[in-house]
Image (tube, rainbow, N blue to C red; front, top):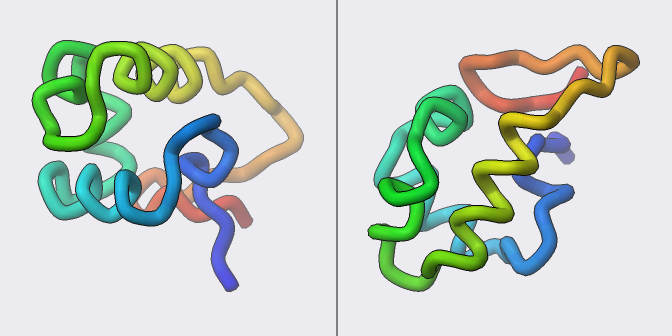
Length: 74
């Protein structure tokens, strides 16, 4: 099973992850999106969008190696 940066975000279950990936196409594209763009996805909303945005833009764990195309942690 693959691990993704999206897995660690509170309130971001399988359905919401799928909706984000379907809309944006990759974790890299999700990381580039603004909180407003994230909130526009059905089922996300402002609070979760800000949580996603902050989590992905504050990720500074140097011990992790992340494939930026897939979002997989290797």
